[in-house]
Each structure stands twice: as C-alpha cells, then as structure tokens.
Image (tube, rainbow, N blue to C red; front, side):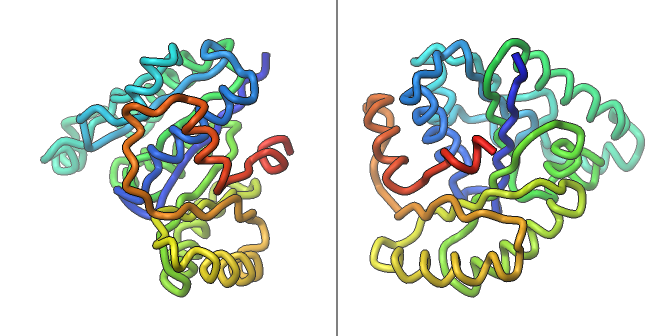
Length: 235
C-alpha cells in the first residue's frame, strides 16, 4: 500500500489546523476508510495540552502521536545555537522516522504542523523543511479577512512553494458567518491569480460548537458543508 501523507500548515498558532485535521479524519471515516487505515501525528509542538483531535483519534481507534519528539520548550533555541541539542540533520531524521513508522501500512497519514510554515527554521526543522522530504500534499489553513488573508497566504505559500512544487490546497477558517460569502468570492478570485498553483478547498465559518460530544458522522457532515477535498486529494 502506498501511504499518502497530507501535511496541514497554517497562518499561525490558533488558526484552527487541528480542527481541520479533525474534520478531515471524520470525512475519511465517512468515506469508508477504517480507523486502522488512517493515522494522525503532530511531529513538533510547543503545546503539550491534549487537543480535541487527539481525543477523537483515541475514541475512534485511529493510531496517533499528538506530542512528537521535538518539543520547543523555553530555551531550546538558545541550546540549539550553542550546540547543545541534536543537529538539524539529526532532528529531521528522527522526525521522518517517527512519521514513516506510524505511516507504515496506512492509507492516509495526517501531519499536523506547528504554527506557520517557517516555525522551526531556526533549528533547520520547519514545517517546510519536513514536508520537502516527504511525498506529501499540503493544505494551508489561512486566516479570516480579504486583504489580510490574501497577503498572509501569499507570504506563507510562497515559502512553502520555494521547497515544495505540488499544488497547495487552501482552507480559510474562523470566518465571521456574515462575512463568509463575500470572503469566499473575493479570496477565491484573487488568490489563484497571485498563486496559480493553489486550489481553494473551503471557507469555514467561525463556530462556538464543542466537538467533545459530537459523533464522527456529525463532525463529517459539518466539515463537508464547508470543505470539499474530493477532487484535489484524488489528483
């Protein structure tokens, strides 16, 4: 079985990458993937608190690693620059080993990135550095707005595409509901002019709903109301 890796990057921490991962996993389950055909991993992190996506994986029986081997604790950057940590090559090798190990025999592995595409650059193990070494597709989760969202997407996706030449999928999250139609129209129109090798996949309204008690089917239906990966992910 050829494992497919899907790397989720975002504008910044808190933009909703983990929620997007949760929605995608629920969609895949609804499309008749079994839990054992899927895997979720967050290979690098700053936050060690349990996220809803990890709880979902545990409940559904999806193999997961929600806290990978590289944790950016306070002082880690200084230690790296002082030569007190593993080298960039050693960090990347360890991260890739963890990803490919959990991905062995799986159909789809979701990789939940840390912060923006450049986070980790100081130690040579950014999201873009990791993705460049994997046969993966990338989704960028962008912020709300029109001008701000477009400017931010151009900045971040340009960095991604400097090392990764495949089409990048775009999902915009946490959009005030009354702004959703306008943002969808203008961002979809302009972003593909500025970044031709991208595909807008969906625009998600801001919600206050907790997924803690929601079924996988309910989450899949909610996510599918905003995001359609079918054509893009089958390419």
